[in-house]
Length: 390
Image (cartoon, rainbow, N blue to C red; front, top):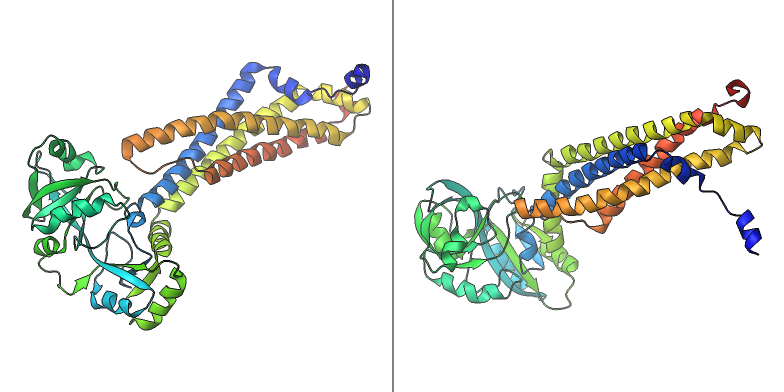
């Protein structure tokens, strides 16, 4: 029994050919890993920036969202009549509404005195705004005019606001040229369009932006009764409300924002092109390795062909070499990608994570890289003639 198994064993020829020269194998794997890391980073930055554009959107306590049809993205929110949000209450599935003012205002760093745009949201402190239940308690602090809640995850360019507030200091500065006081901290995170965030009452917002018509808002949040179908209610509201307002489900509102950055800017094209360049670099590296390996062992392959080994079987050896290079090169690329994603998150606070879809996409690209390069290298073996070699 053991003798038959031993005689019937398959020699791992592809593995032996690759490991015959460890230095060449190490260089090949390093090149494939570099190409994989490049693809991971380019795609990670692209998807991370798209996700960062909806950092605030995802936290809203809403099933439907109203915006002006003139709004293109969160960096330029146009106003629409507030009464449209009130009219939405006519639908029996609507449980509650929250009108929101949205604008980028100039924040003055209390230490350096420099100014920087910060996203400011104004709402009625008694209305639900975010899914975080802790905000309900903190929102009560905004009832006094001139009070704001500062996002502790904002970038450091706004100053050490969170540190000073936790230390018990009175933190006051200027917002849109008016004096405001920080009365609490929230955790929202910067987005692609804004490096920091502030929450304030509607009264304070209108005092900061006196040119804003009091009957207009930039965002309307709608909450539905449990069990209601957001898509169906959105369709009913589109028929009910005039065309000066656009109705989105929350998911569609998030996709609307990402679509703007994906199609109206060069971000998607640039990072996709970077990933494609990484793929091309990897193909060149793998092809050079496999072509050199086939050329170095051409006499051995020719001997096997003269002994009667069919060409497809020998081509399979080259294909397995490409598969092994792809799998072995992907592992360090994946691990390095995880580490670099963590570094990017800590340095920029962008939501760059290793999601399974991207991991499989890069693996598929590296696999295609290996198998495609193997197919090109096979031409060298297919053209080999034992009579000419010997």
